[in-house]
Length: 229
Image (cartoon, rainbow, N blue to C red; front, side):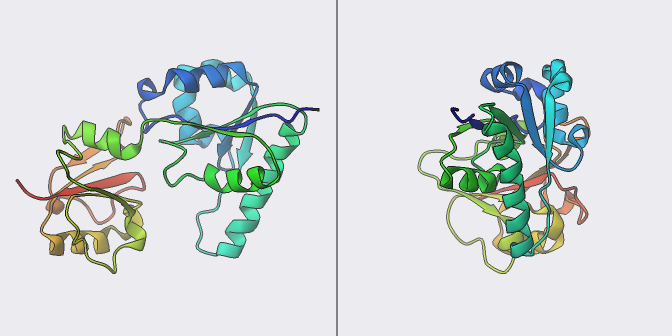
């Protein structure tokens, strides 16, 4: 039997209108939908998709547990379990559409499953979605790069011990859990700072300066830092 294809499908940053036509089509055409988390309906990615494709509720919905911990051995085992779960459907010749926030090529949980699946010969297709940092820049009416400017996209949680001393624009992702340290790093850089929390979602908050950003900003907070004009 021909194996099914695993699709890593980006649903964008939050606003259902920012989903791509291709993402919508794949959800409609396939009957196995996987999402990260223990409870499917609580997944933000699922909620975004359901706002555009309500019939998703009638599909076979598969929760894939993705622990947010630092124990690499534990994470590896859970990711392997997630890949094994998807393989059960793929071995039946059924496609699996795995929904993910933003884009599946940017710090995406599906990447870990992808590695396991590809190692065993399963076909995998990534379907791009609007990234959180592009949506954030658009919300701020802020060009990320102009002329020959460089763009640095980094996970702030791994950067707080180093300086932001390269030319260009910085996008700091995953900053919320270390926002206080991130703010100190930004203060030392002298860069002009903006931040959007829950970009394009109903509870969106916009901060136009470093001083406005709360130390307890929510999980979906993204910082953009540029040379001041």
